[in-house]
Amino acid sequence: MKLAALVSGGKDSIYAIHLAKKEGHTIECILSMLPKRQDSYMFHHPNAAMTKIQAGLMGIPIITKKTEGIKEKELSDLKALIEEVKDKIDGILTGAIASNYQRQRIENICKELKLKCISPLWHTDPEKYLNELVENRFKVMITGVAAYGLDETWLGRIIDKKAIQDLKSINEKCRIHLAFEGGEAETFVLDCPLFSKEIAVEKAKANWTGSSGTYIIQSYTLKDKA
Image (cartoon, rainbow, N blue to C red; front, side):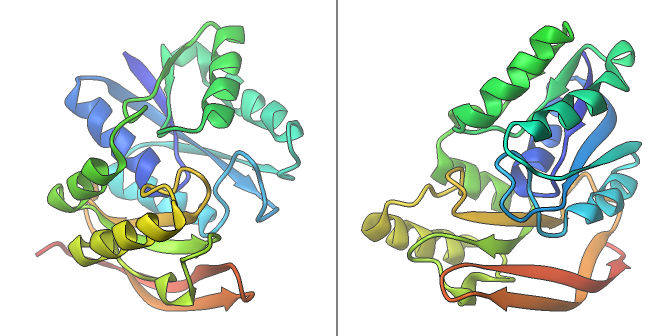
């Protein structure tokens, strides 16, 4: 099918593109919502504007739309964005794993617009998924944390085998979702097989409130792959 991918910049939406392409689908374009609020119910906030860089590295056209990020009202903004491309595609690709809140709302929009909704990560095992990311050479950086057990030391940390083991230990004590589907953390993909170059962070700012925080990329370079 010809798909438009909803991309936040994080691991789930980019890995969904990886899986969809392996299944033979064509990604016609990337759709990215840019919320003005950090507490958007639907959309990823930290470094969201950098989805344009990721799209360029994948050679896929991108269309972005700003939203105030107000609960439910932001769905109208998403629908308007999808309507811009609905006549050129067969369906919408999402990185939903376990969040019925997000998946149901996207599916409802797709039904209204007579489009398929494809979610290749739906109900995937979170530990298996994190290990697949590492094995498939996805370089994923944590850019936001908002859960008990995750402190400021996780901001800017790369998800590798050690990080996965540490997350498992935290999960045993605090019952977080290992893939952060409960909003425990947010991520940004710096490199993967889909990218022509790696995004190398030169400068970033950690903002920590005492119980949650974000990691905002302020400058970067594009590095040739080894």
